[in-house]
Length: 298
Image 1 (cartoon, rainbow, N blue to C red):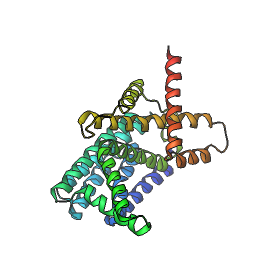
Image 2 (cartoon, rainbow, N blue to C red; image 1 turned 135 degrees about the horizontal axis):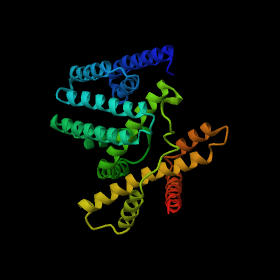
Image 3 (spheres, one colour; image 1 turned 135 degrees about the vertical axis):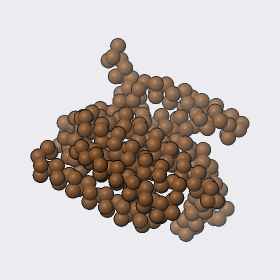
Image 4 (tube, rainbow, N blue to C red; image 1 turned 90 degrees about the horizontal axis):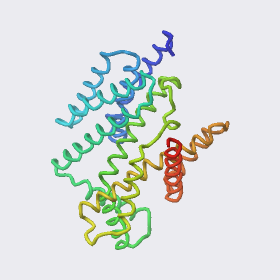
């Protein structure tokens, strides 16, 4: 990995990836995915101690967003791309698990998402109304469900998304940050980080307390479902369940480590994760894993 040929190959791959991502960012259908992964080449170059290129890449990314019509959103986007590339690159370069940089990246992406929502609102676009219209047209085209039933179903779904918007933004920010770290590790090779991300994953005990309290509070819904505390409990339970579910997935991954087909099993575990029953099993496994670790530390 440290030989001249290897270094040049990784730098070239980072440059090719950056150009490809810029190209995909121009296309509306792939813009969100491409712009979400723009920090990947910056992470690689930061690990390789190339200081000047990430700055230019971030500036060029901001310029592209400005050309695409995002005006005052573009400088903030460039700053976030550079900051994520620098923080995650420094974490990988020091051979430590980049959990702190994942938190920083998540907060940066959430800030960018909130600014994006504000920009859409200032342009007169109502995200939830547009989301409702798109879902209704999709259901009507692909299903024979009566129109009134479809409207009620879509209205409930949109209300649910509206209620969980803070938690969904946090989860999306975490997944985008994680995708950037994994993309950089793919270019840098398996020795780019001393510890496995999933193997060493461990939540603080306070997350369990918050999740349990929020889940118990949900058993006693108030008359007004739009109250601040009710929405806070719903979002806290959603976020706690998501991260504890990853803890359960980490426990399963550690159990299958000796197996030759461990990567196939991991893919199956990830595919099954969105199923509510399976996700509940992951949460239970995560809670048990955290409690076992707490007992060992006593």
